[in-house]
Image (cartoon, rainbow, N blue to C red; front, side, top):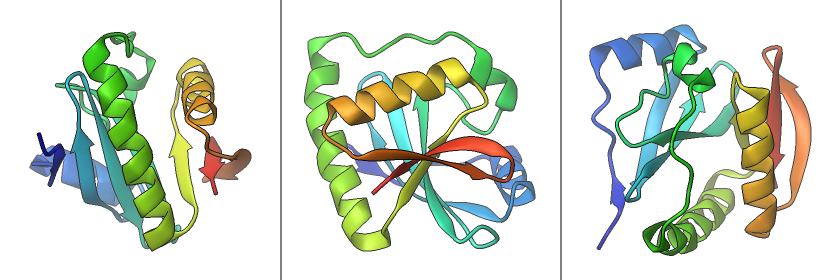
Length: 135
């Protein structure tokens, strides 16, 4: 199964992304329970990875604090292989990638997952928001 697709972003999501610094969706990787989206900001000049549970709205800051299903099943393990490949491709194509969340707990989980997948992670701040950097 080919998981790569262009996210059907709603007008409300486009409005939010644009308000946050001219963000635009580049592409997404859809797994069985989660979606991984690469977005780009001309204002900040960076590419950021957004993660959301399937059916959630990564542009709704209130949802960042909501508890969502974790990565648990065998189908998620297969998805992780695709995630590694896609992040490696994005790193080759775009350089540094950033990951952020309004939930420090989720940001910590993303650090653990990405480090466990073999990526080098450092910390920075983007627009006043604690952010991980994948290099």
